[in-house]
Length: 181
Image (cartoon, one colour):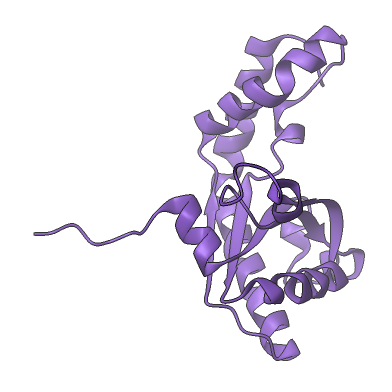
């Protein structure tokens, strides 16, 4: 039951996370497999696809930073899990910027879209033109797929999908090189 008691809501969220961590990881893998299949069937290509489950304590910190103040100021009861849209996070990396929108449209055609944030459009024309670009979609399984035996157990989980270019990904995360031995 949502409340305004942050300590109680943290405990509820930690319990939810602990109880669902394995299923969230399975959902991440299933969603990546589904995306791979949809993309291959459409004849599109990606340079890389990856996913992760957001750390439990990082999720709480994000909630505190982005949502807690406004919710408590407006006396709106909350559950932390309802505000962490990227608990399951996936990323598709394209070679070229003109591949982002077709990929985004393909995804929109196959999932229920909760929200869309075009970080490229937000950043264009600002001093931070090389900032955190890309297309971010908050998604969940569409109603038909959510009832299929292979997916029904993952239907409650939404996920964030980031679609960006290789260059945008490198700028965001830096070049990863193996450690010298």
